[in-house]
Length: 401
Ligand SMILES: *Cc1c(COP(=O)(O)O)cnc(C)c1O
Image 1 (spheres, protein in one colour):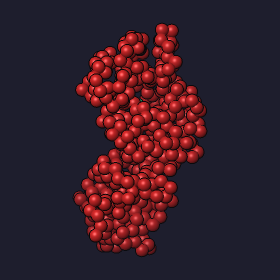
Image 2: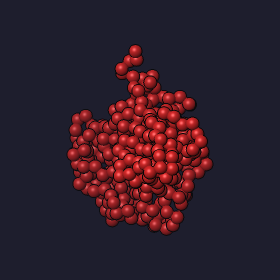
Image 3: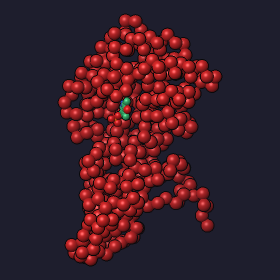
Image 4: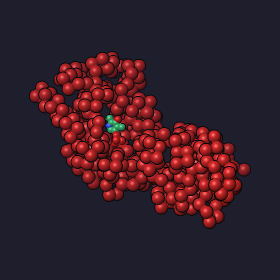
């Protein structure tokens, strides 16, 4: 009898190719010259790919810093033994500051109030000696950060406090993925003007200046400064149609399942809730155990397709919470247990993340981050399964059935 602690994975799973991930980091290292540092952005469970395994892989592969959106995401990485510098990119509440400081998470700050909160938290005994701060300057996004006019006074506030370390100063682009580069150039000029104003009074020699996301990094060397912050592209998806990936970059995650039941439809049969698909002739269909609760959007009902035996299998009727029906390509012997590629390559008959995103009126970012934690991530390296993660629980490969 098998050990009940072993994990039997469901048919629907996300395959995370860690070799592709490492290859994407190497591809960035080729275009971004040393000594510019690479920050891998691993917020939102590493864009749905599994934060801990992704963090370990990118750090081994050449990234030096990690970016997260929330304090809890940073704490998760610290608990997994990640000791590399971590920056919390998103706004934090005063109530979270102490936990962040205790775990040596650098914080993005844009107001004197938050800086005061961090200073107060740094008095706490278990904290590291100093709290690391990155001043965020709003150069045009109007989302989070201080205005350029406030930069001098906030830098002064930070550097005059022995409990605080001004580790970085940064901004974020609103339109770097658009064909028109002018708004990005304008934001960069605003950032440069802010730096110039403080350069006379403060030694910024050790302060990490960073502005570029994936799109800015892919399109030009003008945005490198001291570090680039790489998200979507390290996962092998292009930021937009206007900013493609470069040679050597490929998708990291695919989504696969298996046929759970073969359904013989007769002409006139209606499929799934609401009966929105009506078979016009005898047709073989198949049940796939994936639904909108897994992150396969209901908006794909009657629109998307999956790959079966290298051919397209169209979604029939409405996508349900946990199940979807597809029409089987004629002339192929498909049975229960056959592989289904939900997201993968055209060669497998499946749509890409970008393709599926377009079909449901969104972007690849939202598709990948939406894949639910109940979909097991299967981490593959050198053609071997090295680990799995399901419902937040990471397991070594030995424990997997
Ligand atoms: C998410 C994020 C990034 C990464 O953006 P991509 O477009 O995925 O490369 C960079 N910087 C900040 C501040 C972010 O929030």
